[in-house]
Image: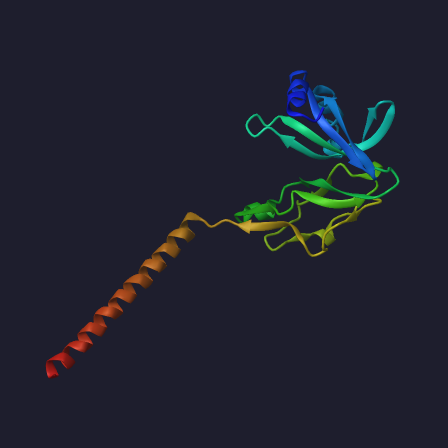
Length: 210
């Protein structure tokens, strides 16, 4: 089922061509029902859900390693499944979820800026967290939340440097501030032009003397 004609036939049957590999196994070409896959991945774990893929009577615990999508329709056109050992740690991407409202930041014309939409987590397949939740309600304009400040889910390790920023604050400029800066720039330009005129007038007597 690896050829183009086979893939097109599978997609007409609403099935998605895929491959299963990992743990030293020879890659196996398979296909999955599109609706069944959508249902299996609709839970809180999303693409990090551990799936039991049955191929010729053998069950392969696996997670989605990569999804290829159609460039226009954006529908899934191919999937790479990674076989996993449920007792061996793997590193996966877990989404970051912001909780609360940073009222003090908003009052000071600021915006909370999420620097990392996902965090790499090393853990066993059955203990992959659904998300990394960050409470931003107490943030101020000077705050930066780094990886080292995040609560670490049980059995997990973050695969990032502790000082890497996850959430920062951006202060928006008001229309008045932008207008003031424009006026200052125009004023500096006018001063520069005046300096040029003075220099020309100073040169004039010297020409006459000659």
